[in-house]
Length: 526
Image: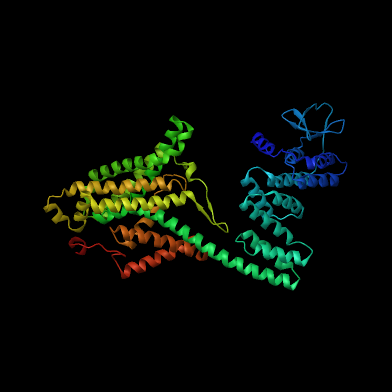
């Protein structure tokens, strides 16, 4: 890591001839007798904006800067010495280390960090400017001005301008402070709000204080809107997770009337399938292909959990139709067996399933609101699964038979529909969708044997609230509960918010027992 850091800093080492003499003088100043003079020399190096200074300051902070008998300063790295000014190889014989104290070390590290403002990489320059914005230091002002004069990237210039304005908030002249407030009032950065709040606590000039209060009010309005947008996105994200977890349950519960307490374990098995596929890619394929494990894991998880669902239906569930209490107890026992089987195979500790590179990161919008790629992909995947399932039920012969069995099982059997096969395929389909949900959930958290228990209660709540067996009801129910949860969280807390949602759902079911979208049919109506 150290070698990488030094290599990155070396990219900055492109000296400008106009600063050559100043740079050499500032470097020699690091060998002054007093610590105050050394600190002044370190600050002078930082204000020059010369990329070579980053290596010198880094070496000073690490105790790797030496003084040769002829007065030249040398940088030591892995036993080799180079001249701090010319970068030529040098002999370290009789060279003595330059002494540093904690204050000088801190100044050197801070100065080296500010020199990232001159990096060839725009992202590094932006992060350096954001660091100055977060912790304004008057000593950074000249460095920021020098960097801003050279900056060509519009996004980086914007951050640098904000950082320079926050530094001007501490200016002695009221007009400079007022101009800084004008420059900051259009920002939606929470750190800018914090700087203005601190200014109001100490500002004595009435005009400057009035301008700061108005700017702060405008920023608060924008940040409130940003928070609302963030809560809506988080609500949609939570709703998509609940929808993925509940779609399969809506199929099995709505068509078969089976209270499947092992549904959560199907989700868990899908997550572990993603883990196994990931490890297989790591073990047998070149590293360049690791990003493809997720698209492969989705169909594999569907096939695995579909097969397990069919086996469970043929061996256990089929003998318990019409007895909901027995199906609930039986599937609860199956869930415990599946959890223990996974613990025996994979262990009880969490397993990490990494996001592929194309799902890592996010889009920074405003005020710290970031659209993370993994959440956006999960929302899209959830809608795609729902659309595919709706198309299957609407236009395929299997969907026609399943809807017929849902509405009137005896009549469907009398018409020659093989209800036993439909039951097995339906239970397998619900389990397979749960497996795909597990793959998606593995991208937003760790995989553990208890993963399914986190979502089973919420899944039943979504299905009952939306209407048993209704896909559109499941969609509306999941998104509604997700949005309400996230809207209540900032005010009531996560736990109390869940309790309030549960109470509202219970009261709603009392008035509308069939949920938002009730199915139609003789068997259902009876």
